[in-house]
Length: 134
Image (cartoon, rainbow, N blue to C red):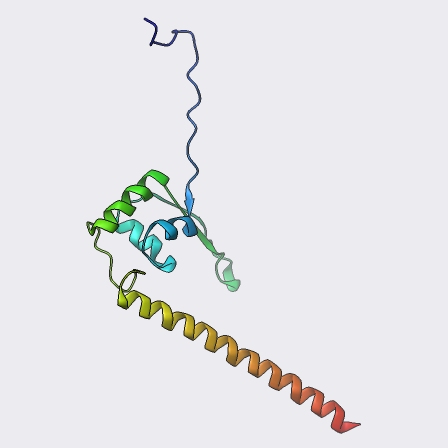
């Protein structure tokens, strides 16, 4: 039979497709990147978690998530069709989700601005103190 492999021939190695990182999955799903692990759990997507171990007094190491490519693609279809229940605040294609993303960015930028202003104020006061003391 021409379509059957030889009994002595070794099987070709099965090449597994690399797992997708959070940015790749965020491009597939209309879900905010912070909520991808939760959405993956609701869509029954296999997830590998790397990092996150405790560093004692210094907090925890960063946590990275990797998603099974086949599961992620099936979930993309299910999410687009509405078969997976994902809260509207987690999504990027709803007004609630866009509003939450906007406020999140605003808080981050405001915090950075305030910290920068404080650093400049402290540096300005230090320079003023040096100049006025001479």
